[in-house]
Image (cartoon, rainbow, N blue to C red):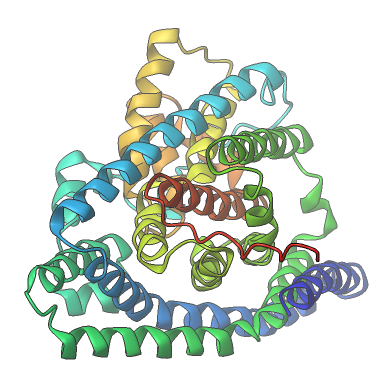
Amino acid sequence: MNRLFTYLVVGAMLLGVAVGWAVNVSLPADSAKEIASNLSIVTDLFLRLIKMIIAPLVFTTLVAGIAHMGDASEVGRVGVKTIGWFILASLVSLTIGLLMVHIIQPGAGLQLTIPTAEPGAAVVDTAKFTLRDFITHLVPSSIVDAMARNEILQIVVFSVLVGTAVSAIDDKAPAVLNLVEQGAAIMLKVTGYVMKTAPLAIFAALAASISTQGIDVLFTYGKFVGGFYLSLTLLWGLLILVAVVIVGPRAIKLIAAIRAPALLAFSTASSEAAYPRTLEELQKWGISRKVASFVLPLGYSFNLDGSMMYCTFATLFIAQVYGIELTVAQQVTMLLLLMITSKGMAGVPRASLVVIAATLTFFDLPEAGLLLILAVDHLLDMGRSATNVVGNSVAAAVVAKWENQIEEPAAEPAPA
């Protein structure tokens, strides 16, 4: 069934590109725009269905997982290991992006028109990325409001507190725990229903994008796009290598298991869309529910490997286009700055662009350069969304290995 779903996703991607190209070359721009608008209805409905189930799914699975962990010391131990891995992975992702943009030099000598318009209207306010606002944003003033706005980070904080409290009660509040577990089972079943519509949404998303922007969007800024995807490939290889070293050869099967969620994230340019399916596949592979339900939601707030790499890559690309050289000290400072600001990405629309804008301002780089990457941002968002899925899956497997929470496959019976 999983293989069939993968085939359907790949087929939907190819068909979406073909239909979008046909519409773009055969119809006037106004007609193509209207068709794209109608196709986008399907994608919008799918993403709304996903957002509808994210908050209750994260809450129920995380509370149930923590409640089964035991005492607060176990939760703290797993939390420290998880955050430690996230920090290490963040540094590696940012550093690879920085090194690759220097090696490839995608912006050096690029004959592009330097934009003069202020990009402020294209992205959200960078002021929300101050340290004070980020810290206060961690704790919800109302869990109902946090769930209504799908603030995953705030839902995680509330769920950790509730799960820890349930585990600390002598009888573990069986009525509440049973209700939460049943809620998680129901939401996973709803997730299964929603996922059946994913290939249709993928087809609509790609067809709509190609219809209006044309097939040329796949080739525009080829060195920049190709260089970034090469960097992502290196990061994937490193993540898989580390997973094999820590978890064992069975980690290769993990990558195969998450190919469908990764393709879903790639084609919809949304890590969030792949969350339910990723959680399901991690548990099928053998990661215990309590570890998967704990690490994965945290990863969506603290471990966006693909998005972090994009921040360093795109910022230095813009500097290269303008012919501005940053000193080694400035680049090290940029890594540390992005380590902090990137942790506030979750739940913010076009968050990578916001972080890049904040970084440009910090180093007195022209903010108008942000407009240079807007044309291909969606195409790059596809790659970084898929990378976020892979990075979080590897993180869950590594932490589960450290906690001895991976169920090994049943041994083959010895031949007679």
